[in-house]
Image (cartoon, rainbow, N blue to C red; front, side, top):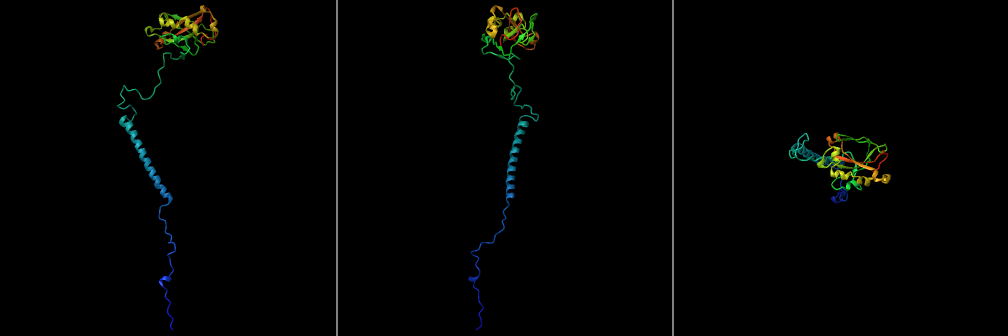
Amino acid sequence: MPSVPSVVSASSAPSTAGRSPRPQADTRPSAPHRVNRVLVGIIAALSLVIVAGAGTFVYTQIIQGDPGGRPSATEGAGTPPTTKTAEPAGVFTGVDTYTENCPAAKISGAAAACVRESECWGGLVIIVGDTKARRLGCEETHSWETFAVAPIPKDAETYVQQDLAKHPTVKRVCARSVLMASRVGSARTIAASNWQADVMPPSQAQFDAGTRFYRCIGTVTGQETRGSYFR
């Protein structure tokens, strides 16, 4: 009997149903490419911010003002500057003063004060009302010492010592009673009759330069001393 060729049916062919599909190549961009796109986006956003900031600067400096930084048209001549300036100096320019527990400061309407740093002076020289004195260290032998300072009254703006000393407010500030209340330490043991108070206006040169305060000065009659009586 002739042999019959064997026929392989379709059902006997190797099955691929249970096999995994052949791996396909990954065509997505690599991680560095994705990071580059993110960086590009960030740079673009920053560029917009910078451009916007530059536009604001140009508007402020050129449109509102001018390229030189001068005030804009809205800042008229009468408009105060926007930058802060130092407060103007008080009447006691160059002198550190205080009013708490200062006897002279209690004189009504005088605006008087005491000095924080002792001021001692040599003898006064008064020529035609122009008063001058040598400033000395209080450890040196001296004749006078400041016990109060006060603004020159508006109705007596003068450097002439004889005239200023007669003003009623000045007389009250530079009174011997104020001097006595201003003493400290061993100065309190010196009898009241030994003390003398006087007025020392600014010199004519100081007055012409704008100084507008006077000093009340005290001394122990007939002697020159060392040290401070009022500080």
